[in-house]
Length: 193
Length: 181
Figure 1 (tube, rainbow over the protein chains, first blue to last red):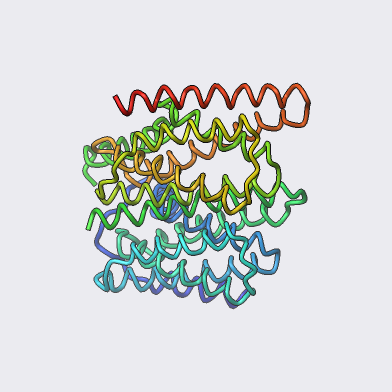
Figure 2: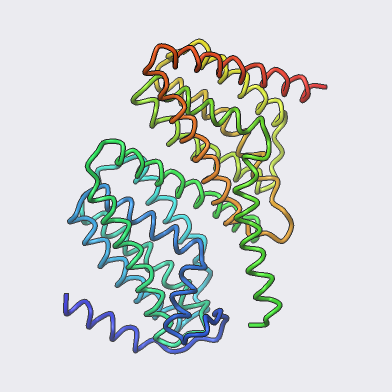
């Protein structure tokens, strides 16, 4: 855990500032990053999709997803901050959210490495979009990553701790809502482009 | 960021979410059909009770995406009216098809409801939050229908649900007449 935290911290500090917009929360760059995450529906949906997918599979999957998503989000954010012109990745990010939420709705019995890979991929895509669009310092990115990690930890813990059958059904229904919203988000992006 | 631009963005997000939440409950045809989906699922029990509310939003989103992309679908209003009529009759008769058939029936109607939602984004509103809003509102109507449908455990409740089904079907007839007029 220490190594992962050190790597995350190093990647955050290594990220250079980018020149784009970031709405100011008025409390400094760290809170701007948190606010950016909470005000970006695509990012929140991605966190929910991974949390539901991993939470439905159990504690070990949720732990893997938490570290994979956080690390990849931070790494992707660092890349996006440094090279914001690599291309628009919002569409693949929404597609990854749709895939993860769809798998959760279907209650797909994925092995832990697959959940980790999906989490890392989704995190990297959304992190890149964050890094490329934020007028950020490293602290903004850390704020956004911590917001996504906290959301993932809370929701996946809630899903993992379920006892009754109806709670599993409720999680799958929630996943179908996330998948539906992500699919519509893809359509809005297609229309916009 | 320019303050006016920020205000516009904030109001667009709020307007989008609010419009999405309100859209499914602003038309009685949507409300009756969504409640009927939940009631029918609860009447039939597992796996229908969870399969229908899981499948409906996904297919509805596909219909919504088609609408967002501007693809014209003929007879959307007729399809929505038929959904109330048919789902009402299914509740009235407590019809129990195979789960795949039930999902197909509900999915077919979900396409029409989704298309109607997808084509009616208010100007200046956030499309993504509008989508989240109408998905959540639709799912909440399903949940209300399921809660209502739990009355099926009681003999009198079963009669009440059949009456509800008859009323939904009657509403569907009226909507169909209006759509065809």
